[in-house]
Every structure is written in C-alpha cells, then in structure tokens.
Amino acid sequence: MAKDQLLTIEEAAQYLNVSKTSLRRWTKSEKLPCIRIGVRQERRFYKNELDKFLSVADRLPEPFDAAATATLNTDEETRAPGDAVAPSAIRHLALYFHDRDELWRLFRPYVVDHLSVGAPFLYIHDKNSRQDALQRIRSEGWDPDLLIENGLLKLLAPAETYLRSGAFVPARMIDFMEAAILNWRACGHDKILLSSEVTSYLSAPPDEEGMIEYEHLLNDMLRRYPQATMVCHYDLRRLSGAAALGGWCSHPHIQLPDRLTPGLFLNSGAHTAASQ
Image (cartoon, rainbow, N blue to C red; front, side, top):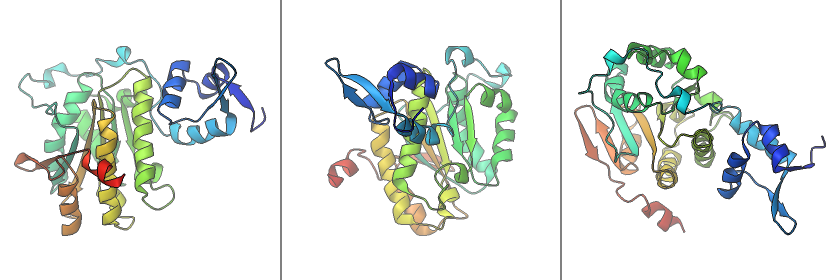
C-alpha cells in the first residue's frame, strides 16, 4: 500500500482497528484529518496521516467494551457507603501534598469514584512511583493487572508521553490528553479520570511559565468534555513557591491537606477569550 494512498473510511477503520463511528467523530473534532470527495462528500484518508495518528494512539488505552468492565472491583466490602467520592462539580483540581501517604488519602476519593463505576483512569506518574500507585490501587481491593488488561487503567511515565522529545511542550500534552479522552469516548466512556504528577515534567527542567500555560489550556479543553476530571498532583517538597502559586492561579479548585477550596482560576473561558 503506497504511503500516499487514499483510503476509504472502511479501509481506514480496518487499518486503525477502530469503528467507522470513531473515525467520523475524530474527523468532526479535527483530531484526524481527511479530505472529502464526490457529490456525497465521502471521507478519504491519507495513509501517512493515519500513521501519524497511530504514533499517538498506540500509547493510549486499547479499545474495550465499557459495559463488560463496569464491575471489576474484586472486593466490594471495601466500598463502604460512607466513603467520600469526588464532588461532581470538580473537573480540574490541583492537589497539594507532602508525602505519598497524604497524596493517596487526598486522591483516593477520585479513584474510587471512577473505578467503582467502571470509568477509566489514566495516571502519568513520576518515574519512581509506578509500583507505589499499583500497590495503592491493589490495597483498595482492585486487581490492577485486570484493570490494565481491560483498558480501565493506564499508568505511564513522562518519557512515554509528553517528554518523549526530552522537553515539555504544553500544546503537545493537550493533544495527548485529548486523544486519550477521544479514545475512551469511542469505547463508550464519558466519565474519565486523568491525573499527572506535576513534578514529573517540571524536572525537565522547570518551565513554570509553560506549566501555567498548560494548566490554562487544560481548563479550555475540559470545557469540551464536561464528564472528564483532571487531577494535577503538586508535591510541596519539590516545587518552588512560584510553581505552587502558579498552580493555585490556574485551577478552579484546590485540594489542600485539610480542605477543598476554590482556586483563583474561576472562569474557565477567560483564558480562551483573552488569547483570541
């Protein structure tokens, strides 16, 4: 098959191993380019554009049946009725913590809120914290290997995502996050949990201005996907005062060790309007 060959929507769907519905959705959202031909304006896809799309998609969760994975919790007794869950209004949260135990205590309600109803969870972790995250999930009664196998859990290091080129680029990270959302939506999920340890990309080295730009872009992106939740983890032992303040100014909600409080970014449309 020639690299510049035009494929029909059926051929493109088979090449990407996705449905034609997913292709239509991705072209409508301009995540995947296509051209239109004929009176019926049928879609055609260049194979090299599909290859570019695959270079991102092959690092995202594999397609799975949402209905078949709605009850993967292996220990229902750990889900007490009084357990805290993520407030439904929270979509973009900065979570400040001092150690891994405190991080999990604050982050646990969001994980439980999603995994208990079969909603997928993407976690971009610090290079040394993957095993800790797996153990925390296991301690809640879930089998992380089963979750990964069924596409409900994806644990990635920065080098596997937006630091592949060795530098943090805000727009590239937004593209990655939005591709993850679209991938899961194509599999039948709207409720999605995304999270990232902020210090994992600030070690690149820190570009606090770029970090704040990224957080503002996240606010804009999340307006398009109101059922997606993004939790950004800020390790107070490793962040500068400027980075910590930047997080406070760029999130609608702030989770402190002792309370949840509004952030200073109260209007998620303000950044978009100001940049136009």
